[in-house]
Amino acid sequence: MHDAFRVRRLQRLEDLPRNACVGTSSLRRQAQLCALRPDLRIEALRGNVDTRLRKLDAGQMDAIVLACAGLIRLGLESRITARLDPFVCLPAVTQGVIGIECRSNDARTLGLLRALEDPATRKVMQAERAFAARLGGSCQSPIAAYATLEADRIRIEGLVAEPDGSRLLRDSSSGSAENPAALGRHLAERMLTAGAGPLLERLR
Image 1 (cartoon, one colour):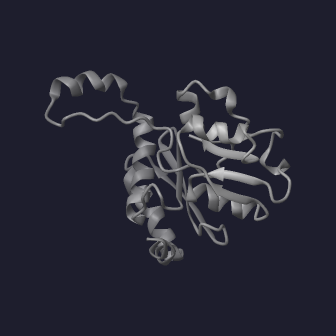
Image 2 (cartoon, one colour):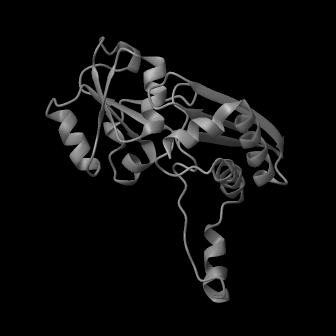
């Protein structure tokens, strides 16, 4: 679920020199990187994973940030220099979760797919998706959420940010895992009260 930091020479984000160029395609990542290191130059990173890695290898950028899940699924886990802690860069909503679609009236296929269901993943996914849905977020919104399940309780941390990192609204909530979606909506309501609504409206 974490974001992957890939750099040409160094090992840590904090080791990058001032004015280093970091590539990312995500406003969510951009906002958090700028808040942590306002001295960095953030540049848009386009193309598939191979194209993005080639741009880094060619020296067009000093570092790039991608999703760990994508690199691992492509057999490129060795290209991960470091996994960014959620405290540094909160992941995208449901980042790393694999979803399978099926016709709702296809009982036979649904029965076969049930063996692939992971109840714990579904619970945290429901919390994160409910959080984003209440905020009206899209894949391009500077919104992040990360839910974890421990025993019968879920903890979800959420973030809404200005793309330039000048303002980060961050909060968390925990509660029973019996109704994950309600917990996600509750956190979203708290963040809307804190000012997330006008911030997101300006970006639409």
